[in-house]
Image 1: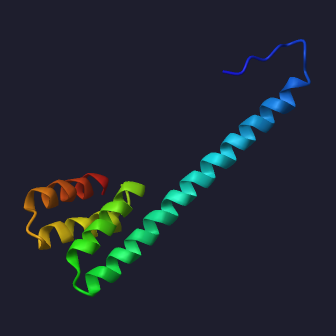
Image 2: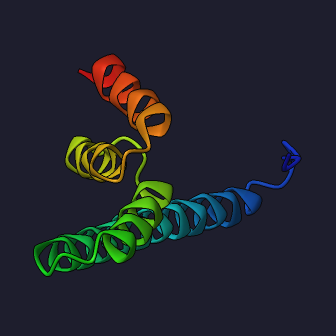
Length: 101
């Protein structure tokens, strides 16, 4: 925690600058995560279209690590688990979808 001395008003701009930098870094990191999730999601869809289920599964799992609350990503992940007869994993992922809606 940053200590503010009441006798030195010149410290306030430094605190504001620090908070602004922290906000910028946080927003940049969150944008990068959604960008990565979108990349792996699209790659997973391409692999699914070509019939490469294992590769699509890997990409959907990566996308879900970057954005675990995206309904489209989680839905595709659950569908691929189901198609690969990984029913236990599919069921758990379907439960996540049910709780987010």
